[in-house]
Image 1: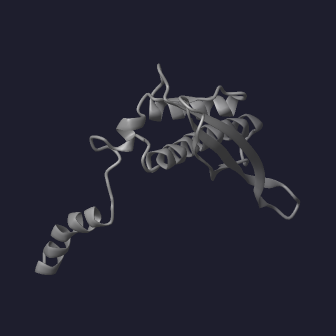
Image 2: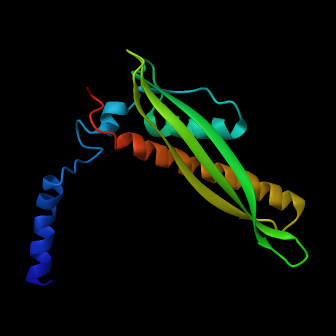
Image 3: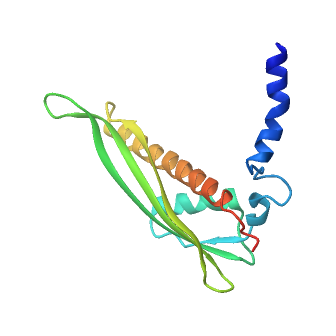
Length: 161
């Protein structure tokens, strides 16, 4: 390894500290501040159930919540690979979660926004295979959206205030 590369690697922690970077999972980081302190709104559909289950897996279930997370999920399915005779061979499921994080003590909205992503599945097999692929795609999408939302929450500044 050249001396330039060694110097660069040694300087990297200093550069990260200078830019205000702080590890989420470090003592006092937002992951620790939020663990088991967020109550997620009750699910109202099978997909929302999967989303809430994944969020609770990421954030922990709240016994005495300090925050309430309201989520609103929307999904839509789009044909992706369409043949000349209008047969659809592949679909995409696009999902969007609008959220608001509310401090329970005073009802203050700490943060709000949305996350979105998509997954795809094949429709080239039998009806049973296609339905199984669609179900699996929905599960994968809820994991992705829950992970994105968790990352957003962990990156919020000054939650201890």
